Image 1 (cartoon, rainbow, N blue to C red):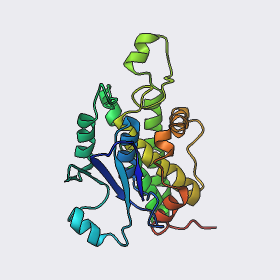
Image 2 (image 1 turned 180 degrees about the vertical axis):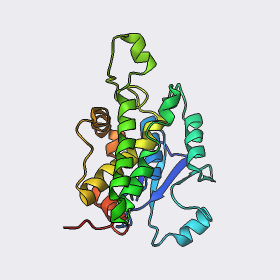
Image 3 (image 1 turned 120 degrees about the vertical axis):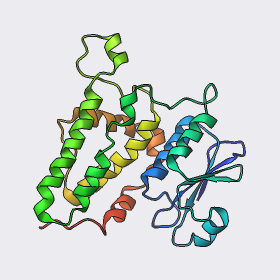
Length: 244
């Protein structure tokens, strides 16, 4: 599948893993992350989904030893996700494109352990460890929720009496690189936990609920998400069935 995001011929191509059907977007938070960045910036690019069941020859010719996601810019292949992110921020910069670099240092590390704790929880094969890994996972969600509810310096400056933040995203009311890293992972967490563990983000975590609600209203998020069935399918082989 190829999707052109601008009327002009782009120099940049984004290659992402295809879903099980071989055409639509597959479940890959790194692919989702880069796709969101390019969508938000309004940058000219083409998107190509790579069917990994048929891809070896194509990948050997285009990008030997490389797995999606990666980009090709002026025939140069770039595959390191963090370096690609930095490259896109430098290439598509103000005044023509929005800067997405967070203004607050702690934004870059907020929620950085959530996906790791989720993976331990959802992939745990020992029933005796269920309580331990679930509690660790919950604590990581609580820490993220606390960050989202804590006013940032600019909010406190505007309102010294403010006790709970009402900002839309991690760093403020504008989407940043940190959101594009975290939101795809939270979407996977929400989808997988609900289906395989009948677990939903606790209602008292109002900061997280606000954050996710704001994200789902963004076209950059909606358009770049893999479908829920694709996410569930990708985890089916690693989740221990729950006892009925």
